[in-house]
Image (cartoon, rainbow, N blue to C red; front, side, top):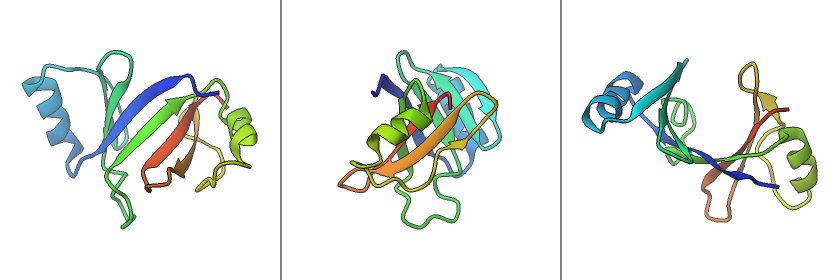
Length: 115
């Protein structure tokens, strides 16, 4: 069902400042900038910086692991008897959907891909 780890998302108080560090100091290639997100090519998995992991959510730990799937709604249907999801699958951009859940230790996890 899960294809691969697609993104590691890190919380950033100031996405622009953090993006400058990852791009200029570490030399990572920025592959996209979308609203409160900055994306970097790190090989198999992408690094995403975002201010949204902390906004208004006091229980957020400031990170998220995002797993690629071929269909978010199909993966959700197949897993919803085994996983307590935090929300229903939803569109996150023109091409992809996501749904969130937590592991037994409270780590935020997501399924991401086409509807």
